[in-house]
Image: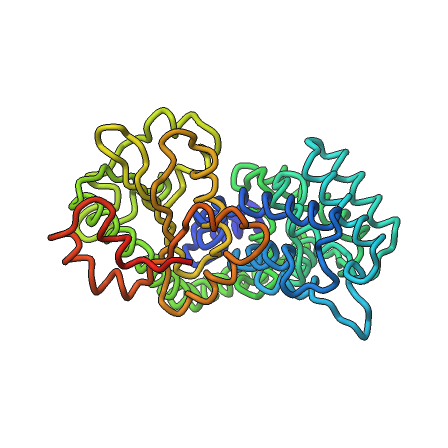
Length: 421
């Protein structure tokens, strides 16, 4: 096995690396739909000339923040979109024509299916020479076409240089496209380990570029001593960095799972059938699994209806055992994007038809209430006021859940403690 193949194998097995912490992370998949929907809102607002003339407070800020929360690859993704008035970049806020061109670029990429169409949209945008609107926009395209447009940032470019020996100048679409071709070639050569979702190769290069792993010697005829030194350095790097990161990550996931468990137990005590998000059902909780005692599948109306892919990922649903209608839906937003949780609740409320949820609840740490209110105030969620989405702070749930389970009936107990937004 060549050295790069060896490194890829170790990367895939490293529970503290980006493969396990991000590529296999459930929230990565959950956010695809919400980011796509958010980009459609950006396009609509630009065309209606209601987008505004600054980044703060726009629909673009909402979407880019959702992208930036995709740990760890996209941390800092919003920097490229911040308005820098002295440099007048990126020039899509005060220049109306550039703004419309950006909307056309996003719209073409959202509506097309093929690699040729995506590349055509990139070339059209590049030809306009809009100041500051470079390959950072590819981080948005990734969530539209993960098998065509890989993410990019400084660490990914550094990782590519260390693995291939080819330097990638940042900020140029031509350089991004050349790196993209190289990433496709690496994926094809190592398809046993890498996915056709280009987030995989990007995650690997990010870990190399950020210094998590040393890159193997580039020379194919590297000496035995050089190969041995690299293997030793790789083993030391893995041992040094794995434990702290996985411990921190585990604490976040455990808290999220605990809250889902509280809602599961409360729903069962109140007489509802309980659905746990399909990708969370086998999470360990106590002496069993989070999905123990819950519904094995959704009713046909939800399973086969509009928005089914998003609905099955809602953290917790309470269903009437007789009618199989959803009575309450809960999105737990411990550290992840509140925006994406709202989108999934809207998919349920607007797409489920008869049997639409009676109660829609965002459950989050007490200190996130301001974030929840800020998101719900956005024009993109104008329908939320009609649907009555409410906020349940962790502290309220912790203090009252046992009393609610013992003496409550139906939805009255949870509605009594939830805050109207």
